[in-house]
Image (cartoon, each protein chain N blue to C red):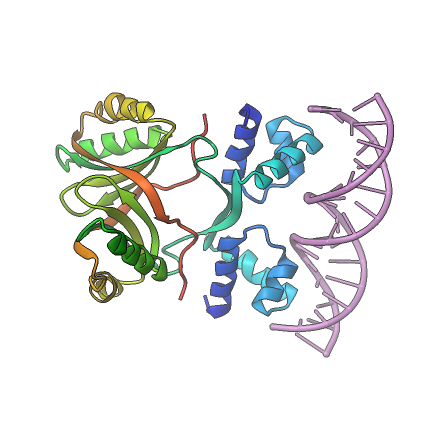
Length: 151
Length: 151
DNA sequence: CTTGAAACTCACATGAC
DNA sequence: GTCATGTGAGTTTCAAG
């Protein structure tokens, strides 16, 4: 992982469909050297995959919510039951175990407030391991994720 | 946006480099029809862009933190000063305005705890508009974002 | 690291149904 | 919406410097 690799990753995070020829030119490397580096980073798992990024609003996912969750206990069975439930809910886009007052932070996208209520009441609150939740409704996005900053 | 478009988007969110031929086969559509739909969704901004997704840990970004931020006021100059500062910090990957006790939720990735302390003390605390912050250190990721669920 | 070449696949545009 | 087709472009690998 030298500075050329980081340059490559920066470009690929912005444009995952750039041709090798164009990429090598932007990096200032020959086509074959550039190709070798990209394939190596793919094989090493540095580049996980390539993905289309879609516009949340245009597909109707108007409501984005962050939820802080506290469990009844840190006992293994509560943790496992919670994580299993989380993994089974497709509206839950991500979930992190965190320090602080709450145990988990999750991100959710749904079509409408009614959908959120349904998820909150029927799915999340129904998990026995959950003792408390706090809803942080996203009002607007100041900064969107556009790839990691590599220095 | 019919169910075929959603199928296409689901596949492209998983594999942004799949060939049109392979995509059309997975969707059950002819190559030209599939190609037409993809190009249309790109033009319409439904597909924003394509991006390589890189592994945070392997590039050394070991520390991921969520930060809740409260401002001194909701006055326009405080909001604008804060948002401008946020946009100028590359370690801040995303920032959402939220409801609740705090005003913003931001996500940060850095190499080390020391880097986080520097960001927290020298950059974030230095924004005059900020009155209070709460750090939620991510201990582990239960579920990673792998694209939106389209139904 | 470089250049150059060969073999192959895919994109893309087209015309026809 | 489907199928067929041809050309140009991009990928991938290899050899040699």
